[in-house]
Length: 503
Image (cartoon, rainbow, N blue to C red; front, side, top):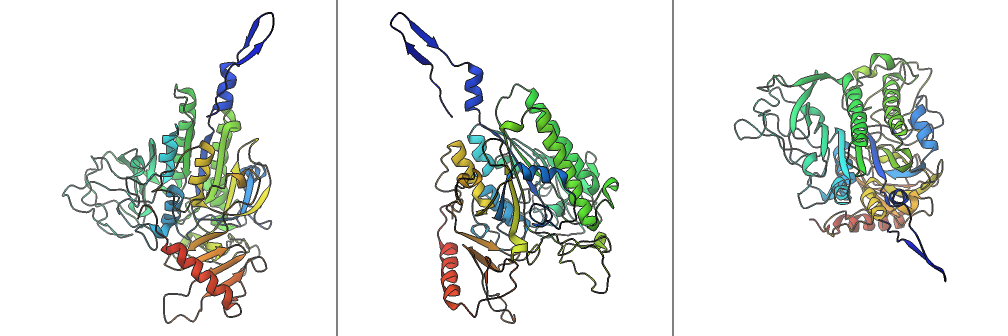
């Protein structure tokens, strides 16, 4: 906080006191509001600012990009949802958590301990009110009627999913216990359950993830998947309006985490067929529309000038290609294969020129578009090549707010505020990345190393790429540069063996 003292001007004849008006003090000292928008499975190449050949119209995100600093080497740093969200919320690499591969399954407990300071907790401690809408996927404990684990625990699909849940009691160890004053959304996609604050109030209607076996659910409101994005957008806008009109003058943190464009591609009818990139493109355009609604609300409420907007994705796109001719409605949560015999006129590449997709340690799986807008503070329309990882959000915002992060938290978070301000390329020269399994890689300056596969039957050796010359990772230099391989292998091992203070 900036403190401004009254100015005292001495005059031989009399004293003149010039006081700065309270409104000016508030204007200078007020902390910025923060909105973090985290798309789900959106590709690096979906926005034109990262891929000029994108076939998806995203006017609101295009405008946001023009008003933002755009990072071109930002990382998730994992190729699937749970570990990336852990990194964002804790400032730690996901390998420091108990979840070593993939995503959390149904009803699994929180990945964060109560002692671990999270991003929203840090903001609460800095005087913010915090609200989240959409997808958590970091673990929540659900009460049961028999005191046993919920039916379906540890699975992604179970016929008796939730059969012994006690829906009359609050959930625990979820978003409200790790920094959010208000939460509306679900914990894990396959659970289907939507909770408001700590009470389960709603659920998805879903062909694959079911709730039929649950008891005492007369109070549950059911939503089609197509209704969820408009629903959480409406609720986010209501939150902004209520906060602005209330007597609560705290700055706010709004975490908008939609389940889009994750499959199944639940596109509303008014957006179907609106792009040349098939249902996937239509879904991204629908997401852009609702992001535009939030941005317009900030404008209408006079909040834009003192609100920081961050936009990123939690991993690369599920799809390597998207087109009208592809049966994308049939896509399931596994790699999407394209019939090579299909003739396609217009092809959209969700991950742009980057190799790989969601689940891969290649760039297409782990590099994310990253936009940061703060009028008058972050340069508009500027691109910056600095390395950045989503676990850097904690240290970066801590520097902005003069917050002292406890030593047991945010082990792997760098303060890159100067990067967002366009002043330099930052202190980070390496990023650890991870596939959906336990395949790890290291981005070190221009070099990218991916460790040897765990399977002894794999024909692939380890991988080494010079991203300055080969950003699409087409030429494996593993055998040609054994010196660089040895150096990067050692550096990756040192990072992963380093003792996190919260271990």
